[in-house]
Length: 194
Image (cartoon, rainbow, N blue to C red; front, side, top):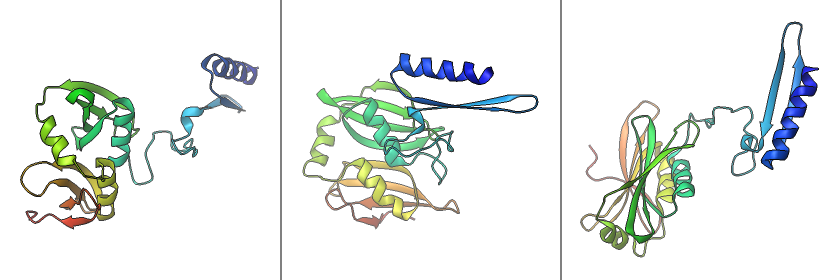
């Protein structure tokens, strides 16, 4: 009986929500277990994540590149930085009309935790630093990931060496700073890194 109720509820939810769902009911001696799978159990590539219910990747969480992608889906524009800070990814986005936003992303699931409009006035400098660049913040994060787990990526729009800066942590916890070329995505050690 419980199985029929579970299937009926899941079917109704799928019809009302317009999505697809699958239910599995398993009856035991003293209890029954119900598992409901929805479209949310598949990631953006269509891969099944049902055995990864907390949203973590095999390496332990949402990468910098994935956090940037999630932030840009929520707030379209140009991602200028991403930093794992105070238990969440904080992604700064320069939107249309030179409006700044900070989008917070959960590091374990990639869900948007919140967004706020910021009062920044350096949009012209940022746009000038990005002029002619073909490498995005997401690209820079992916390139730097070959050196370790990226915990921050930021546009350096000061001085003559305009480009992306990334910080990685090795499995032992050692932090390293890297420069990512804004045109080629080549990763080199930061000269100022101790």
